[in-house]
Length: 538
Image (tube, rainbow, N blue to C red):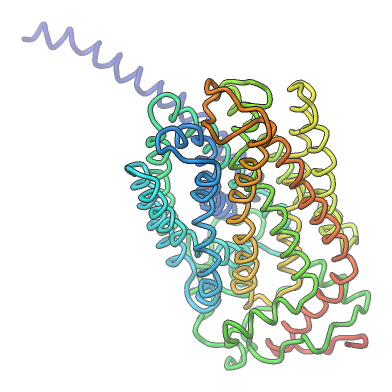
């Protein structure tokens, strides 16, 4: 026994040393990655918020991409057409269109993180059950439940972001957060697509359910509710987040508090229009706390702000095309260039890398132009993103050579993704902070109409074109309802939505300054700030 004990000791020590060395090896890249994220975000507290909000966006994007990545498997297993596949991708968005306006009201009136976390739990359960679907109808009903869970995401995320981060950094920070949307799409295409190839399409849905529960737990455990109006905004280098309870009570409206209510935060764009004596639009200046505005009155107000209406429509057009690409890109690439499913997924993933670079660069460029005195800098970057993407996608789609098309697609993806963070930051500057949730609810309703329509429109047009075009061979796994020429021409036809989005965004250059001035005048009027706005109002 003694000899056996002595013999085992070096073995046990060697095993322990090996395990310790393995953990150290794993810990080193994780620590390096954490430090890098903290440097990019501006400190540990900012990094925590950026990562968690990015993960929330990643969930929804991964779901749409997963439907696209397993499209061939779904068509074969459930015997569905491109149109039915489009319905599966569209139904969650249709639910959000109906429910997002009430979600915006909740966002502006109650604590936002519990609403967001509860929605993610519902989303996770529906995602897991989707993998057990035995029919198209069953899967369609579970997609309905998934849409219910997604409802709070848009309004709550926008409102939280505005209260966590100071105005001067919002374009860049939005870029970091929106990178989660692209990483989620990449996860859906690459991981879910490979799982479908190696095991079954069912495992692609299971793979989304488990991490989404973890995201919900992380939000509940590590992210405190911020104070509205700026008291919890995180300066660069911050190590902790000041919760709402420690900053100011949420229940008292500004006009009832002797200290003037919410802390008034002025962005660089707002400060510049003030220095230039840009006049507000007097009929749109709010005189009372907008928290008390009813749902429809608030919706009418946010749509009466011309820049906001323009950016809402442009955003919807952009998401229409993005959703069509996300749903059918693998099918298109696989048929157009005669690739296997795995190779097609890798090509689409490469385009996603370009978009990831663009989404971070776009927000940074918009902020830089603003810091240099270009009040309209964010609008300019957004317009360039739309137009540049349309110009580059067209020749890429026309070419039959992957060596020619792929670089064009990658750069087009960069332009396309660059528009989002800078325009999202611009929208916060033209809206009273106590309307952020409802304003985003209105935008989300328009956007989700486009998102719901896109898979159906792309699928229906592709199926119709396919009836007059050559059928794809069954070896490529498209089923009887798809054709390479059908999807290729569909992607070309709908490029008009990107061009229209760019033209609309350029029109916002004429309205943006006055709407920024109106937002500041409204903040001052409702917070009781001293001093009058200079300039002649309209």
